[in-house]
Image (cartoon, rainbow over all chains, first blue to last red; front, side, top):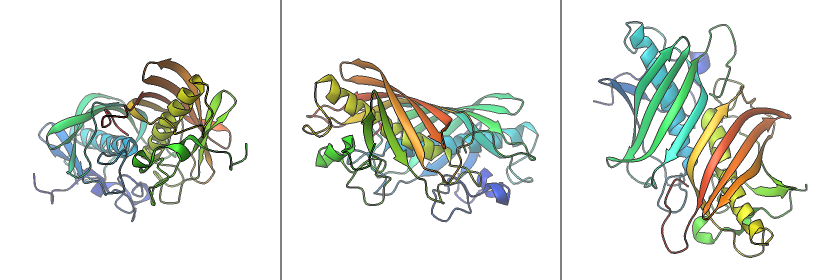
Length: 161
Length: 161
C-alpha cells in the first residue's frame, strides 16, 4: 500500500488534530497515520535513536503510544466504514481511549520501521474495540487491546486522548 | 517529601540508564524519578505543552509512558526493600515491562504536575506487580496495572523497557 493514500488522521477536525501521537498539527509529535489494508488497519512508524529503553530496544512507553493512537485511528476508520464512507469522505470521527492493555512479548528492536496492524472486534454505539499487533521485521513483539470511545461533537473528551 | 531525596532511577547501572522514560542519561527523555513515600512509591512529572491530546488534556500515550516507567521503578524499589536495602544502597535492579493495563477514567488536564503513586501487590521471583494511580490536582484520572520482570544481569531484556 503506497504511503500517499489518505490516512484517517488527515481528516480529523482541526480542533482535535494536535495530539502528540497522531495530530497532523503537532509539530513535534509522532504524526502517526492509519490506513486500511483490506480488513485490517496499518500504521507505520520508525522510532528515533532516543526512543530507547535498554540499549538496542524501543521503550515500552512508545510501544504503548503507538498502540493508543493507532487504536483510536482504527476506531475512526471503522466507524466511517460502518457508515459506508471511505477515509476522506468527510471529517474523520474523533475517538479517545477508555482502556489500553499491552502485552510485551519480547524486546522491540530499535532501528527497523514498526508496523501496527489493527483488527476491529466490536462496534457498539460510541464504543469500538480494536485488537492490535506491533511488529518489527515481521516479528510480533507486542499486542494491544484498545477500547476507544467516540467523542461527542458538543462536549469535551471523556477519556485519555 | 523533598525532591532532593534519591530516586531509584539514579542508581540504575549505566548501561540500562538510557530509557526515554526514566533514564538519567537520555538527554531528551522524560527522566522520571521514583521514590518511596511510606509504603507507596511516588513519581511526579509536569507535561509540556506539546504533550497534548485533545486541546487541554494530556495524550494517552504519555499517561501510559508515565505508568510504565514508574511501574518498573516501583518494582526496583520494592526489590531493594525486600532485600533490606534502601534506595542508593548499591545499584538499583533493572526491570522491564511484561504487561501494562491502563484505565483512562477521565481526561487528564494539561498544566498541573501529575503524580503517579504505586502500590506493590506481588513480588514473586523475578516478577513484581504494581497497581498505580495517576492524578492531577488530587483527582485520579487514570489507573495502571504493571507486571514488571527483573532483567538478569547476564542476558538482554526479555520484554518492553
